[in-house]
Each structure stands twice: as C-alpha cells, then as structure tokens.
Length: 273
Length: 110
Image 1 (cartoon, chains in turn blue, yellow):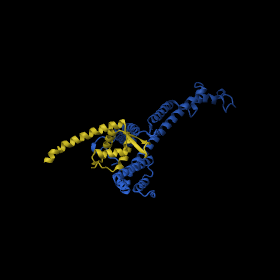
Image 2 (cartoon, rainbow over the protein chains, first blue to last red):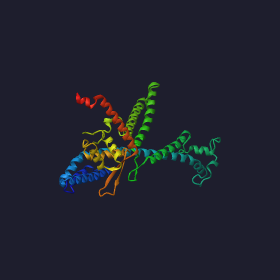
Image 3 (spheres, rainbow over the protein chains, first blue to last red):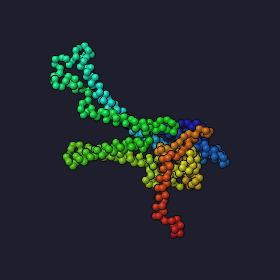
Image 4 (cartoon, rainbow over the protein chains, first blue to last red):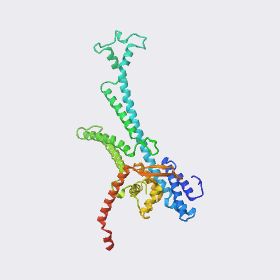
C-alpha cells in the first residue's frame, strides 16, 4: 500500500486509487488524472459555497464514489478485452506472415528450379567435373530428357498440384496483412494502435470460424447419412465448437456497434453504474 | 433514482446536446437536467465514458489550455446514430410499459 503523499482526504483518496489501479496501464493513468481534476474542481466549488477545506473535499469524495467501486470497472474492462484483442491481432498477423512466407518461398523455389537445375547439370561440384548430361549413364530414359529428369528429382521443387497452391497462399497472406494495415486505428493522440476496433476483431473471429463451422458440420452430416466415417464425430464436435465461437463473436460485434441495443432495460449491463 | 442500465443513453444524450465537454461538465449536466434525480456516483461516469470511447461512440482529447489537465469528450458519427437508435428504443419501451400500466392520472384516481 502506498503511503499517502498528502494530508487532505482527496490526496489520500487518490493514493488509494493509485494502488488499486496498478497494472491497468494507460486506462488507469487516465482515470487517475481525471479523478484528480474532478475532485479538485468539485472541492473548489464546495469551498465557494462556504464549506471549509476538509468538508469540501469529503463532500467531493462522497459524490465521486468509493475508490474500490470506481476502479473495479476499469481493471475488469481493460485487462480481458485488451488481452483478447492482442491475442486475435497477433494470430491475425502471424497467419498472414506464415501464409506469405510459405507461398512466396514455394513460388521462389519453383521459379528458381530452372536455373538451379541448369547450374547443377553444367557445374557438378561447382565446375570441377564435366557436364553431367554428357556422361554416358545420364539420362537413363532418353525420351524424358536430362534437364527434366534432374529437375524432377530435386526434392525441394514443388510438383504438379502442390505448386498450384503456393500463389494462393502468398496472395492470401498478403491480403491478410494488407487488411490489417488498413484497419489499424489511429488514436486520439495521433499514435498508432496495433489492435483494430473491437468490432473488426470480432469479424476477424466470426468469419473464419463461421466458415469452418459450415464446412466441418457439412462433413459431419455427410458422414452420418452417407457413409459411416471414422471422423464424423470429430467433424461434428469441431463444427459445433466453431459455430459457438462465431456466434459469440457476432454477439460481441452487435454489442460494440450499438452497445447492446436489443432491449432498452439492458442498454448496457456491463461493468459500470 | 437508479440509472443502472440506462447510463449509456443518458451520457450520449448529454454529449449530443452539450457538444465537446469535459467529464465534470457531463456529470453536472446529468445532475442539473434530471433536477438531481440521477445522482449517480460521479466516479463511475468516467469508466462509462471510456467504454463508449472504446466502442467508437465517443472520442476524447486532453485540453491543455486550462490550469488542470482535462479530457474533452465528443460524440462521433457512430455515437449520434447510436444515440438516435437508443432513444427510439427507449421511447418505444416507455410507450409499451405505459400501455400496460395505464396513464398516471387513472392510477392516481384509482
């Protein structure tokens, strides 16, 4: 507990608030400054009405509410939401970077396979040996061609269907990162907030989980009716779980767009007065 | 009078009428316009304003010109829309309740 830095009731109250707001970050600091300004203004008004200094400060504090009551809402409101926001944003960026890296590296490998194969053929052991294709035992299948055979044997070169997915991964990753750059917020202090608005984060959860729910549930239902598959129960469970997450995210989006507008008596049942 | 559950609408309405104001003025307006009936713990208004800001309904900035640092709050376009929607819902709710319980004069006479 912090030792009070002043003798007045307001100073002691602010010290109490300071202790209770530990760990709440910028939101806590902001509330502390606002509380100080509010209490000093209210006390000054009370003194102007004829109260002595201590009575004026006590009246201001009584009207402000207990420190425990006021600060409870701040810590509860910031920690969980901020953590969830950071988690979703981090997953979003990591997915974009991984998809871009996977797709771009696959495309680069495929594109570089031609000059790389020619280099291998022409300069076995980096030029110390003659051209491999001029050796009598290569190629073993003359109709295939030396170059195609060597290139086909390179284990790192994507082949056939595999290589078709790389551009899509790269474009998908690029789109994810571009969308994130577009939806970043600029705060009132003109600094960049890396987490997008809560409604957008909700959409980022609702869309992929909603699509996954549809696909997995469809697989599960198909397995139930058409053929008894081993994975049917897993598909159904995962599909229902994804649907639950998607529905929860959609409810959050609605909550943030109009702050729970569905019923007037429950306009905002959140952690506030 | 307990305003739990209705504080968002009240704050949005005060901000819509008063324009850009600091928190203390919001609380004063709330108390004056309700003729003292809505005597909420004043400290709880600030977390509520912060929550409206996180929801994008309000923006705020520090006012540096005054001797004490004050945070000025202002309604956004989304905030205006939300205020209109909440107001409409509230009036509809009141009308329905009124239809059930009957007019005040009839109750008083009974």
